[in-house]
Amino acid sequence: MSDWAPKKFWTEATVAELPEGFTVRLDGRPVKTPAKAPLVIPTREMAELVAAEWHAQEDKIVPDTMPATRAANAAIDKVRGQFAEVAGIITAYGETDLLCYRADSPAELVARQRVAWDPLLEWSAGRYGVRWNVTTGVMPTPQPPETLDVLRRHVEGYTPFQLTAFHDLVAMSGSMVIGLAAAERIASVDALWAASRIDEDWQIEQWGEDEEAQRLTLARRHAFSNAARFFAASTL
Image (cartoon, rainbow, N blue to C red; front, side, top):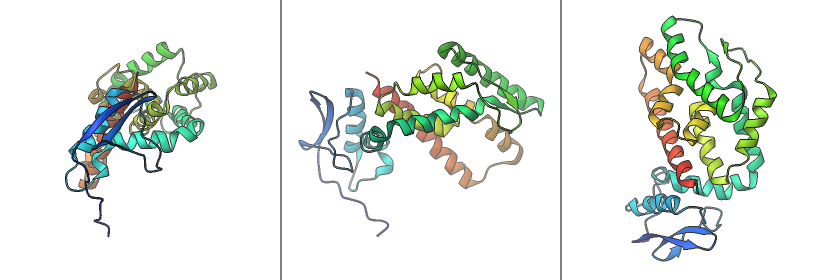
């Protein structure tokens, strides 16, 4: 039973415009979410991403190959009804943002963090009018309440579709600052992912990496990239 998957039952996936947005139709029939809500999405670009995933399915439906569809479903079925809660969860990442916790040695790691992370913190400070408390070690260091308030208000301005993608950008990178940088496309997805991996990559250089860790890292990297693509597609 664990190998069971629904079979493909359509031949054509197309985008259709509606008064309230866009949808995807399979042989003319509109797609619905798992909760049976109409799949109405805000932009043609996002609808085309979703339609392409349905079109690419072969004999059986493989949800793991449909990240845009899963994100759209989550935005409609879950995030829309729990918007404030999700916004709060994401903002909490700012309290212990990866970029604010630095190594005190060795010198090469300290330098890597400084080169990659300082420009991102400086950008976010100028962009949002916030300041960050940066420390060494792992003991929690409170961030200014004003910083978290500003960031929460910004996040609350997202649509449910943007918030869905932004959640994954932040969760996969461990950094609200990196998530914001990805959402606003101030650097490439590859560069931002590399910035989020400085500590882990340093450890791999010293000790190596096992196959399971490689698999998990690759899955997170794909999730980060897919979230960046979905966020960009959600912007009107």
